[in-house]
Image 1 (cartoon, rainbow, N blue to C red):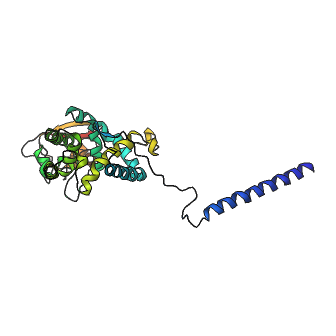
Image 2 (image 1 turned 90 degrees about the vertical axis):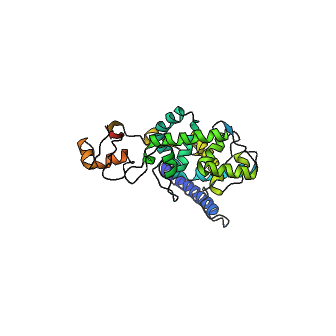
Image 3 (image 1 turned 30 degrees about the vertical axis):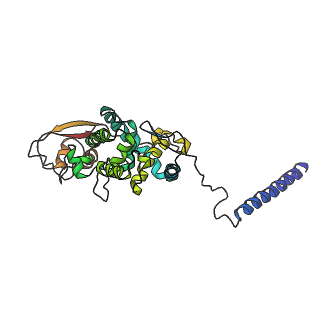
Length: 300
């Protein structure tokens, strides 16, 4: 009987505690000044004071620069789905881009330029720029890429990275500054030089620019900061969550391929696998009357 009394007493205490807890929750959630859950918060972020791009300091002490960087920090931290996709795709494609940048003596930070340009996807801009590095047709051809209805090497990660590196090398010779070089990648060398001459300043951070180019360097810098410190910005993942590049073997071709489906089948793969690994092949055949050498990636 004593045990029964104890059980009833315990249940009574639990019931009273339950009422108090729920009363507190109801009281918090009934706050007329708040339209969200009591636990929902959007936290302001502290802008790091030691941000750099390609070894060049970002002048956070400038109020305008601080606001621009703060904006990108907020947008890119709280755009969680895009942030996670950046980590996933970077794991797949950065190992291809990094050694090419090194080969051309371009700072490693420029891999983040490719990331903000395309999200490391073969996308097309409204202006007609295409590929991982968002090259315009004229620029791509100037730096040795083939661009036509049958083949578009802007979609070739290795070749487009090499073309971008050559452009960046040329821009750096003009400006002697990697920040301005990156800005010129967005606005064009002629465009950046024109506004520098008109405004009579020689620093990207002192230029009054259009909205896109004003955001360009802060976006790169913030993307680098977040991707260098994922846990600091709330991104949690395991290596197994990231994407990986398909292992391939390279086949050299110097003849026409009248039917890419048959070509793929002859190498033990599907047309889909061929196109995914060689997106620069635009049509269902490869025209090659000039007997040019092409290198086709075959999954193994």
